[in-house]
Amino acid sequence: MTVSEFTFLAIGLVLGVASGAALIEVIRARPPARREVRLTVSQDAIPRRRATTLADDAFVAVGPEPARGGPADRRGLEGPASLGAPDRRTNVLAVGHSAAAMTNDPKRAPGRVVGMPISAGADPMLGALQAGGRDTARPSATATAGAGGSSATAVTTGRNTSPAAVGLLDPPADASPVAAPARSGPCADERRLADERCELATRAQAQAAAAADALRRAQRAYDTHTAASTAAAGAAHPRAVRSLKEGAQRAFRAASRAASSPEAIEAAARRWLQEINRINREAAAASLTAGREGDAAASVGATLERQDREANASRIGAEMADAACLAARTAVAECDERTTAGPAVARATPPPPIEPVLSDDRGDEALGIALEGGSVPRIFRLLRGDPGAMETLVAALGGGDPEEQRRWKLALAGLLDAILADAIEQAFLRFPHDHPFWGPYTQQQNRDIIRALASLGHRFDGLGGWVDERLPSQRELSLALGYAGLDPMRMRQWPGEQQTAELFRDVEVAADEYLASVAGDLTLAEMVEMLGRRADSLVELWNHWGRLRPLLLEEA
Image 1 (tube, rainbow, N blue to C red):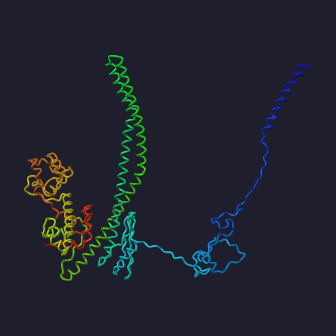
Image 2 (image 1 turned 90 degrees about the vertical axis):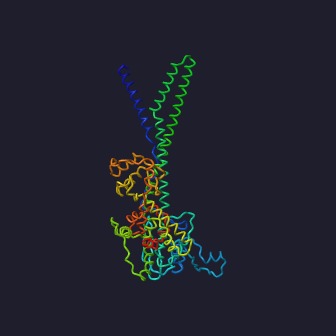
Image 3 (image 1 turned 180 degrees about the horizontal axis):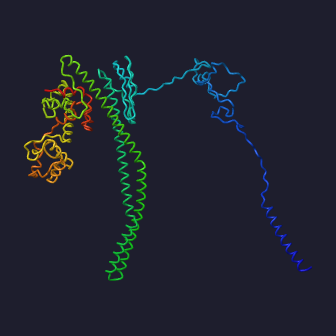
């Protein structure tokens, strides 16, 4: 065998071994054949399952039928079902077998259906309102009032009075329904409607105050957390920490230079190390505090927008409820005036009543005419402190009952105090013409000076002095003159401390002029708008304003 033949056989052997090994690996890599079963399901091959009870077959073609003995069961009317028909009704015990067996009542024959009484329920508030509406047979017109999303409608025809339920806000959880007081008389319907609307307004104001208080608390908590987070973040800032450490390093260097022994240098080093540790601890604590306070602020801030919307909605609802209450009280006052003016018209023929004029010039209203003509209505005499006017008015309102007279006197005193306080707040004062400080200026200029002084914190107390004895200085008097549009250089001699304390000694409150300019016809709407929140404590007067207003406008 030659060398070339041997080489050829060796190459063939090597190639054969390699090919065999590759073939074996390919065969081993093939996955084994799996046994598969293919299933094809067509649509609706299985009946769809419907909502049903456990007594029904879920896969029947016909749906469940009415329950035995139920309201929709017509088996007794249509006759008995066939014997072969399937019964897919819910197994409800029949009255003849169950009720008679359980109650042992022989009067209940088998198969007899006994009706069960169902009550529609009764609303206590609606019952109270209907009971109050039946107290009078006077027909009333349809009245609709809306406040804060609630409405009240009363529709009557003929002699049947049927007021609808009045929408009220959610009452307190512990409140029990109380029957409304019965109203009678020619203005009973108006008074009942005013009571309902004002009760709604009271509850709306309480809810608005609670919502506003909750918003203030949340805003205060948010501001507190934000301030604490900002302060802690500033304390943990790397620049602040670096500044503190540099200060500690400077202190160490100064102590080491001044040290006279190795022990003193070691003590300075220990102090430096303690200071560095303290700075690091405080920085870490401040960082944790900043994160914690920031999370708390974010948590509170997430509710601020919602609480702000709720507070605004409650405030708007309260304002609408107040407007509805005021309109209802105005209707009561007008009804009372018509009722009390009826007999007077029959006995005499006084001048026709003056209606309010909605214009900027109020000189043609009742009090404006009286002020310009020199007449003195009773309200002017009351504001000027006439005791006789008060006694006659209290006697006319309270009759011969001392307790009623005392109650009316207190209520009227509250009204006069509110008008005087409002006039002082609006700087309606009368100044002496021969005064060295007030004399050179007109009444209007002096009032402008008073408003300027009030803006600086110096106010008239209504008794000839300054509130809290806060006297203005010469500089503040000069500023007040400038704010009023006057030249301070015209003042030749400024008052001293004693003269400043007595600036209001001869000044009077022009409450009559203020009342004539703001509430010239003395209507309920004008009075409530003029007094603002001071009117909230005079509810008793507003409820009888129709009776009181003619007496206040009566001249001597």
